[in-house]
Length: 390
Ligand SMILES: *Cc1c(COP(=O)(O)O)cnc(C)c1O
Image 1 (cartoon, rainbow, N blue to C red):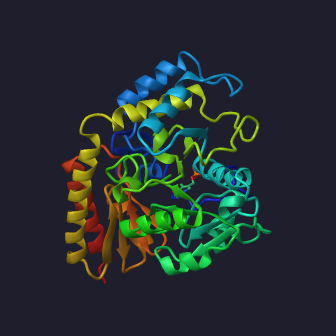
Image 2: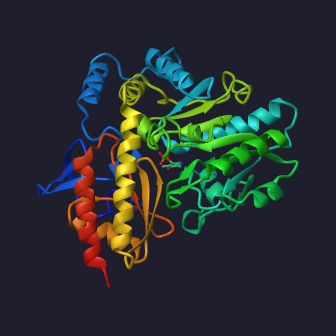
């Protein structure tokens, strides 16, 4: 018999009851160090007191009005995202994939409005993940995501991530944009090199293409800068963000320059919930904390500490672990043994991690962790590696 919740997920048989900071507790009373953070969503940890305060404050005033009317919290959040990024305008959504798909519409409409309706194709990278709508699976084209769901929407050309020759060769008169994750998450914590990002920006300028970055997983402070592209000293034309920007309240956003969004006028796009007062109050609360004094510097410091300790761990367990990679608190352990085994053993020892492609275990802790959490993570991973050593 089919389960009440449609069985599309291979779920772990555990039910969580409550969380506190970097810790989460199951219905049996077991405590886990949460280095999944809802897949990079709970950036401020569980039940952050300031988030609770701001959410409750808004919940007592107004939840939802629709986009028929102006929304003060949304206008304020949009302006703050503009002030802290390349963007000049923002569209709010309820999820990552909607934010990403809005970017696809922005790109196509831009070329249509500027006299190039033939330019509609978007170059994407292999190993990429942009979500699960028909458009997003057509872009990523992974076997398990597309099988049985065809015909796929046309307009996406895949190239090897990091390969500039392939990228240049894939450009045709129909190419509209290049879309990459600044750091691939689901693909196995694969960072684009800073040189690659700079070269992609130059190629976009040379061929009149829009640079469209997906920072749904790597943005909002995870790498130690608010946006991961800042490390390369470049700016995109369009960017999708989500996950951590609501800290668990469903919220996404598509950011764009005024030029790129030239065609996005009244009636061209919309969402019933998108950017509602409750969601954007949460978004503003997240920004209050992440933009607070020293917050991002601490992410850099904790990321450096954790990565160093993980390198030692790799050196101690060469038959289990191959490599540590990533930036800030978006780190991956590429395994020698099947990565699922490490996820399971870590959970058995009291710590949550999440798998990714390329046999990688992702470590995506809340951005509020301290040295004590790093110590505990290393203790657990060390024990898990000892269990797995052949
Ligand atoms: C999670 C993710 C998405 C999709 O977000 P949803 O909220 O699941 O729709 C898209 N792109 C990247 C890079 C992601 O990590």
